[in-house]
Image (cartoon, rainbow, N blue to C red; front, top):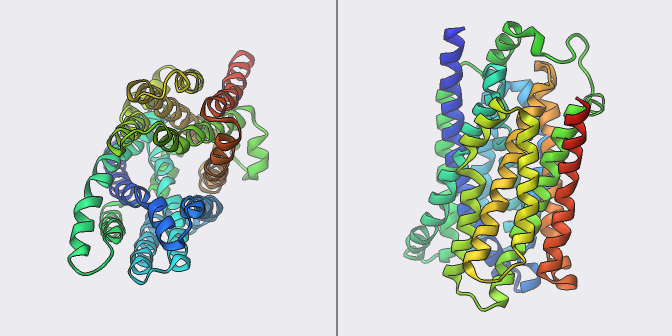
Length: 406
């Protein structure tokens, strides 16, 4: 088992590297998506359309990626996904250069599809590690987002200056950087992700046959979701994602309405992304030590507190604390839920079930992104935060009931 553990550490390290590179590319682009949307469409009402298209493309392609990962392996699937990201970011760069909104949306579709593949990398880390180390393995991949949250916004400005010297709109610079980062990530995965996690996952399952659920006939996704633990895992991730997006997306506009400078807004969003990723290493270890249920329960409770805290004051410090807690609560729900779902699946059930889960998570993101503006316009920021807190109560109650019955 020592050799398998060594291979697992290597694979997890490669997956962390690709997650860091890819997230830096995605976040660099996301920093400017709404601005580019407004510039290319000519209408401020369309500013959120590129992000919505990106999220929906990722959601609807996640289930497809599950079959791709089963068919050509985790390594082949990730390389294909990152290569799709290169094409997509290259297309968005070209769209800005020729000032075409429709071409830009086409590039965002490809980038959304690429992100869906990258996100499945966390499950590849889970399957190559021993069951008692799965939470840690998932968190070690997710924490790559911390690197991306720092590098992404940081490189957008210098890249804009570079392409501006070429006579191209400086907004295109971030998308060029994204293409380069995706290409590097594809090379890292192609060279380093050997042997394929799919094959190592089968060996780990043979070493620990008592942990494999549903051996024998491969169950359908809906059969799996009829199992209480699997349903709890999916509900926790889906609703945790929706609550996070509902509050996060509209906070910038809420602060702008209170006449905050862009530096203040950036500081609040930075505190949020720090909460989302920086503590992944803790949440994963707690999932292994405390159990999956207590971690998800803690995450749900933190989401509720963060939503209420966001209504206290529109000042920078209170909102920074609230948004930090929002990211932290999401992280506990995401890591705990991902680990719990991985526990419920046999090797042949993993990719397509996890892809279906990410389809639902992506739809929740798109729904939250689109609805946040409508709720904010109709009810105001505070009421929207209270509505989000009610949604966060659902996974809290579901996990509590499941733990008591278990």
